[in-house]
Image 1 (cartoon, rainbow, N blue to C red):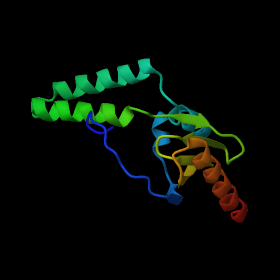
Image 2: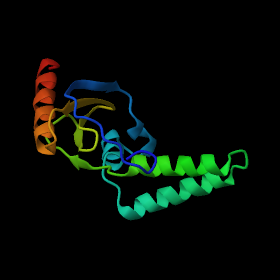
Image 3: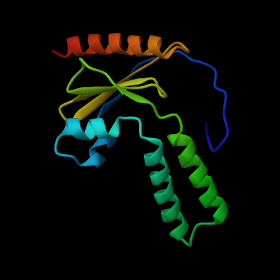
Image 4: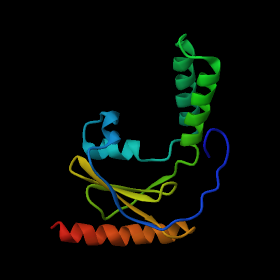
Length: 144
């Protein structure tokens, strides 16, 4: 979903490490990296999404230098990006890990850094998740 409309994208096999380093989870600012990671990489409730959308709309509405069309487009894009967010905790990897079903990434926290393993080879979420976990296991074994 992009800008309020659906796009059909053909399935392309994607496998590999797609991120290594600092991460946005740190904006949560909790006591430990694990707490911040778990707060950031989780599926928000419907109420949380509505509250965030309301705050964003309020903030953008206050800016008099942005046209109504631009504001409406920005709000629609933000809602589209939030749609379908789906994280689940995964145990056994690093200090914490989460599976991002929408983007097909296994995000793993080690210390205060993360890496993401993408596995998108099937329309079946569990197949992708299992492959990402297998690849992460191999990467972590080589790092010991």
